Length: 312
Image: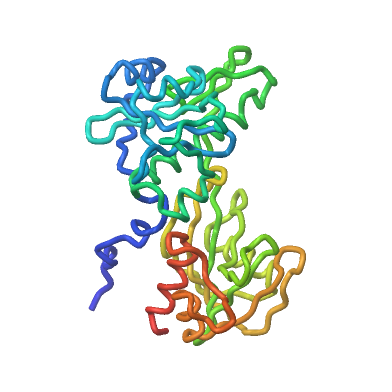
């Protein structure tokens, strides 16, 4: 039977990872310098507020989206307010708050971004909106000055461009691609841990994709650099927005051509081959040694689980 190009699962694997629930229509063709003001004039608008590496969560169950009236008391910065788009005919914006987070009212709490994600504090669509907002706002904070002449730049197009008033250079938000790979050999997989990992946690290898490099070659290069393992076939599985600070995790399965490896101890604290049975115990948190995989929403956990379920 001939191979069909779109013979693939009806439900894309990327739909099930954390931060992938964003339902905002970004209206990229309609962005202009007036879009933030127009959105704020809409009484139904909602604003997501960040600051100090945290995001504000209102109520229980939690929500990140404040009405303009509620947001005003939390001091959103007009010059740091960006337009995310429309969701269900509602304009969605984001801003950096100048409010003292230590003095928040009882109904509002501040959480670091990872806690909102790992603890499931808000609905999936708001988590996706947070990834979009945090990535953009962080990019603006890190790119205030023109890379060509050093002049302070000005935000345009509702937050999707910065313009230099001196040399007229145009700067656009960036996304850093990261390859994350589930390395397998026969009936076992290679998982490793960095020194900053939580106790007992093992995950997939990962590394930034470099300029002029394909995803597949980045998987091969990073795997070899970190483990001295040669990799043959590489298969894309799923991707995940990762707002730490503005990355896109590109998840792949990689077929190791050997099982003899040597860890780069400057990068990794430990790593070893795991059997499928052992990985199942790690996924459901029943491993006798307390070993575990990353949280369920992480793309690493999806890569690991897909290998376990594949049976090969």
